[in-house]
Length: 295
Image (cartoon, rainbow, N blue to C red; front, side):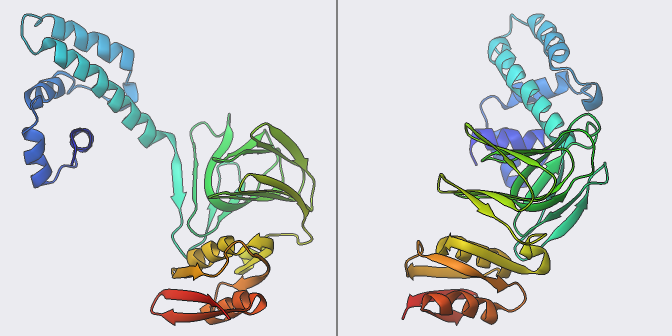
């Protein structure tokens, strides 16, 4: 493990015996131990990086005649920033994750609810919720937002803002989708901004924007089924892998060809037939690996 990794695990009190030995072998090990003793009175709830750094600098300056003062002062700055980061990261957000083939329902502090699809992550701040209704999403989720102040969903691809409504958000690799089922949804993507009314969908596939219609009153995945309209086969394969914990070898087929249809989350063979038959593709299964091949 590299030096930075050892320091991080030391800060977290998570070194195993082998890593502890490697950490003790660092050339500035003694300086870290002295620094740890200097700030052993650190208490996270009352933490102030400025105050702690000033206090520690005063202590260190009194020993400026020692050769280790200057490098230790630099270490102090890095370590105190690290402690601040660890503290605020550990206390800032409540985080919920789902694994492959797993979904879950989350109740937010204002009675809003979120259904989280497979392999997704949702995080939010309980303490500041009344002042800032904001969640961070990776993956896919369906939201039922209680009326109130502005509600934001932040993703790597775009920001979704509502007051009180029902909508679905997908943020996957090279894919971003927002569907409004009730109320009004504002979507910001790069320099584009659009308002979605019920039955409208905003889609970005590999950077290409599409506007679509939605006739259902909720996303199909809530009923254990994935539905697609003119989507590249690779997106369908990715979702199949998320829902069934399988690996798909699609090297012998065109994964850019478009698929329109759906597949169930409860029967892998039926799901595969639903995908492959319309596209004229054959498949074979070996344990958890599925190989696709054109007819």
